[in-house]
Image (cartoon, rainbow, N blue to C red; front, side, top):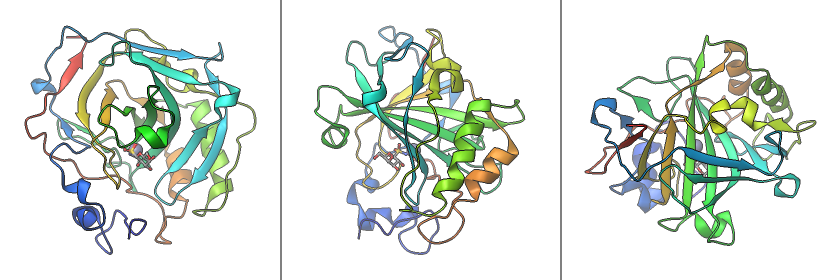
Length: 268
Ligand code: 1SD
Ligand code: ZN
């Protein structure tokens, strides 16, 4: 049954997800190992174009622990975020939520790897194509979603805005423990400066949700430049409880084969 999946090989670990969610055995799955030397350029791609309804690049939302990842779901009535450009052209996508994957130790944690190397964490900003009414409607459509992946690395300095999110997590320790609205707004553009840079380098390819139901509906955009996370911020994330009752960490799916898909980089 669909909710009984996890990251350990107990019940429905990653290699068994297909038993619960058949699409997870597909040929165009995510994450992948980004082999940088094989990334091609595509002359129709451009820099990312993100627009924030709030001029300071801030968002508001509610924080939940769904047992798989700490997630901030946007309150669009307080200002949305749209994504176009990059590999997406004129099609606009609307930010639904963002969440974090991370390791129990800092040598692993990201879902995508770069030339075989993991980062300690990976943040996913999940956008849906505004041709559809809602995220739910878009999620299974082949052109329905685009997710921006941002790597987090330890030892790059202190990110104050990540600290605000990390400290708020203590309010959602247990899955389905309700939601919590972090005080004030979250300055997303400050948290990830490359979101407002017209020149942020990225990798892009066509893939899937990295969790069941594994819909192959995602244009992945993985930023090349990591942001910083501290060890104590990661410790706070690891203090959450997973659906299994264990500590929530190592919530990353192993990489999948490209199976003939093209991986692009921008700029060339
Ligand atoms: O893992 C998330 C999952 O929790 C949910 O947020 C889903 C969207 O419904 O997206 C996947 S992911 O592919 O962005 N990792
Ligand atoms: Zn994710």
